[in-house]
Length: 235
Image 1 (tube, rainbow, N blue to C red):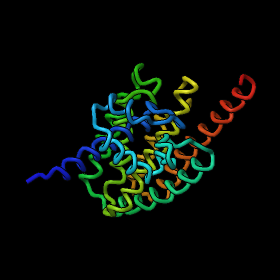
Image 2: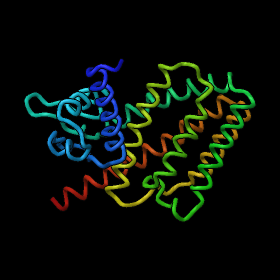
Image 3: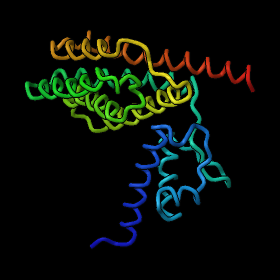
């Protein structure tokens, strides 16, 4: 029997997922105030489950709860970006080493299939601004998590998933603000990463994965500097 309390928890969970996705994708900009009345209309939900959903998200770092003032989308900062990317590299390399050790032929086939789906989108004109292409974002996420799918630690994968979303939020915020995509050979980066994983070369795979993330970090930091300088010149 489904109780009223269970239904409320289920609604709050769904709302938390929806709001988090919209924060990651830039629908709710960094620093934006989250008005419960407006959100209630946007998500067609009651105030109470919305408040519970936002309270849950305030424990993840995506939302900041302000005493007596409600909720606000957490700001982005260089310090947080550098810190989360550093931890993400360490955790994903740990998971990748375990996946390479445990992964078999089926896992290898899944990696090749995920890479193929991503590459087909990446090589189309529609995929030129990849960070704003939802199909590519899905395929990109699937590829990275398929690489790690041989890891058996649920806690490790939970932390990695949160950090992945945090990284995506930063990347989307920069692309939306500047109106341009990352100019680098992402196709080759993914190909080389896949090849090293299929060759069972854990050291090389982790080195390439670290470089892949660091390239993104440097791009975002440079873009944040540029946007900040523009704001100073044109307040």
